Every structure is written in C-alpha cells, then in structure tokens.
Image (cartoon, rainbow, N blue to C red; front, side, top):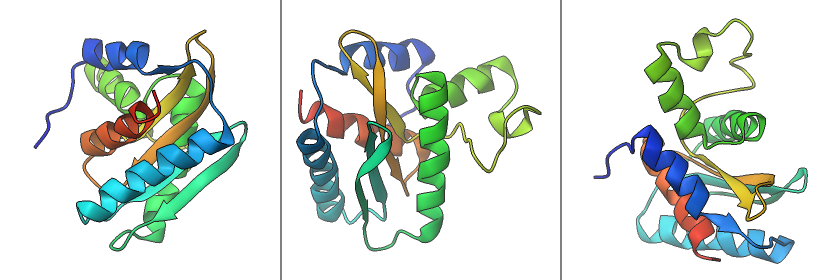
Length: 153
C-alpha cells in the first residue's frame, strides 16, 4: 500500500512529469494504459483524460459508479484552477488547516481537493489538461493518474 507523498515530493512530481508535446493520440494512449492496468488489478475506477478544453478519453471499469464521474469533474476543475494536482491542493489545504469544502468561496459541487487529478504540464510550464482517476483512495488515484502520463514520456 502506498503512502501519501509530502508537499515537496508532490511538487517534485509535477516538475518531473512534463511533456514536450501532447496530442489526441497521446490522450488515448494514457487513458488506455490506465484502463489496462485497472483491468489487471480489478480496480473499480473511472478514468478521464482531458485536454484542449474537452474530454479526450473517458472510461468506467466494473465496480465504479456514476458518482466517480462526478468526483472526476470536481478533481479536474481543481487541478485546472490551481495548476497543481488535486492531491497537492488537498495536502496543502490540510497543512494550512482548512479543506476546500470549508472555504466560503469554493463551490463544493464544482471543486474537490481530494487526490486523483494530475495536470498535463508542458515542459514550458503551461497546463493543457489533466488526467483524473476516481475509485481508489485519493493518493492511489493520484499515483495511477501520474503513472499513466509517465507511460508516454
């Protein structure tokens, strides 16, 4: 069982997992790699690869539910808003003493600081989308989303 990385490690992951380019085909390859691993591990997950303002890959495996799709959207919105993984945002908020659902200016129907969404970051620093997984504990969703991106590096 994996542990939750500290804030420094989460930021380092975002520095290390950057893309020189990203295409619709790359989105499919990332999503399919995560799907295949999920099937092998019998993981009850839903997967989304979002880029260029649209969903490029979406899949739900056995054991997942419609609720996972709602979690995906909320985690993705958080990642795109903050430019960091949703796990980083959640761990930072926890360290600061307030989770996102308690923030008056954050709509909990739209945002969530639970882990599972990892930004698609270009080498130049721009964020073009996110890979999001839902169905496992937050840090495991995070690790799987990041692993998927690493498969095309």
